[in-house]
Length: 358
Image (cartoon, rainbow, N blue to C red; front, side, top):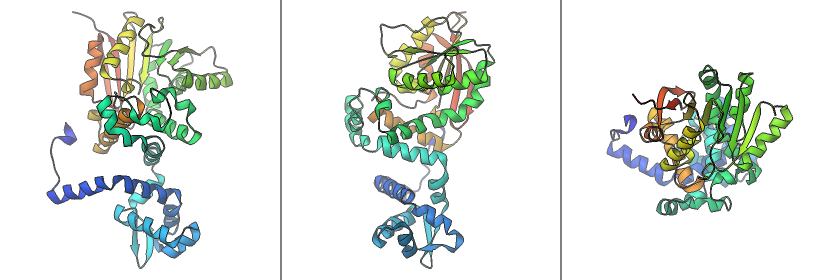
């Protein structure tokens, strides 16, 4: 598929890449330590003149030994360079410090994923999120996000919102040009889409449908901002077979939601959407498909995010390819009437309606 159809590395390059993989956990922790101790910032602040190991040790109040081993690792990672015993920042070090995507991904991997990934093989064997035990005693992470320690909550929400926050301003006019007055936001989380919607369109009413934890967060903001007449709530477990979805909406919106479920569960959820809408109803799906990316590194990030779902989130979902995901829409009785790729960093917008037999 695109980027991944050929092996382009030489044997030497492949062996080198294998060493990067073998030491991956080590270099991750070193890069984080160089960032968190302020060492990279001190080096960057020194400019072209550079700074010595002794000066860095003095500024950070860390031992000469501690700074040395971190910086020597940083040299081979390409975070810093050294000339005449003075360190200066390298391009990769700059991005570790300042690139928002890198910071969000690094904090998420460290705070949410790192310990849980030790249980990946068990997760693959059992089909369950065995790494969840490192965070809490829940069946899925979505039940427990609101109960995580503050730093972990921050890292999870920053990661969860980063990609949608970039896409929402571009997607709002694409959705609300269809004269939607009542919209059901399934998996609405803490209300990012709902609040953006009522701000964008003064006529729309949004119902957020989700678990109790995220809904309680959204309700507090609704009350603070006096939006009770614009945003409503429907508290439920989406996978409850006995409960139907609310009816009477013009459209259903799901943003980075269906990737939280297995293929069979996606079909089940979409069938409930089918039953909740009339013949003219619309389903909007916003998802980042790894086989619809402009850049290989974007596909790489999505592939690795899938492992978080496997080991920690629920054990049976992933960041899907369009090739795997789109047939689920067909199985549920919908047809795609519009597909817009490359929205924001990585998103695809799908506009679906009930399939009309010829």
